[in-house]
Amino acid sequence: GAGVSQSPSNKVTEKGKDVELRCDPISGHTALYWYRQSLGQGLEFLIYFQGNSAPDKSGLPSDRFSAERTGGSVSTLTIQRTQQEDSAVYLCASSSLQGARTEAFFGQGTRLTVV
Amino acid sequence: GESVGLHLPTLSVQEGDNSIINCAYSNSASDYFIWYKQESGKGPQFIIDIRSNMDKRQGQRVTVLLNKTVKHLSLQIAATQPGDSAVYFCAVSSGYALNFGKGTSLLVTP
Image (tube, rainbow over all chains, first blue to last red; front, side, top):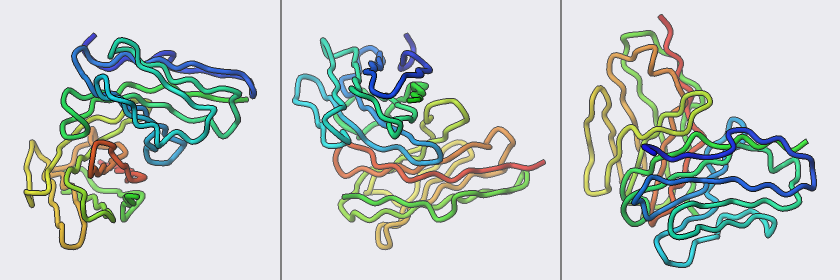
């Protein structure tokens, strides 16, 4: 597609359940980021993938959060045993060159609500 | 770590006026700066970027000014239009991760 695609756009889950959020980056983009945006807040960095390098997971808030990127393209963010404080919009972005040195294109986000 | 803050959470301007949105950052090693616009229900959209070897960069109706001495960044929007109403974020990088401020909500009134 022409842009970064995220699915689902909305997800409501019960506390304690696991969820998977998907990101399809722009074709050819080697860098992929996940951010979390809580209501009225800025974007909180979660994880960064660049090519075949080991991902930077320094922003993941707990070991309940994990992410993978298969074949250098699609990425999945998994949250295990969801908690109410996990409710937020999860945004994925990709860029064409290494790191944040060029424009990062964002998807529409997945709005996660934990009830 | 990097601390990024915006000086004003909300800004109301009249249509046709110029808007100035400010941002401060803490890490003097930061060398790449981006302004994003986020409309309701959408992901952030790139507006303009600037690297630390520059003080000013202009786009269409937008200008970004960088003052590395006081670690301050601003976005100027000329002749603000109703379609400019959105939340504006500055993002700062000293590596690859972009650190975002909390955003300024710009409201353009007729």
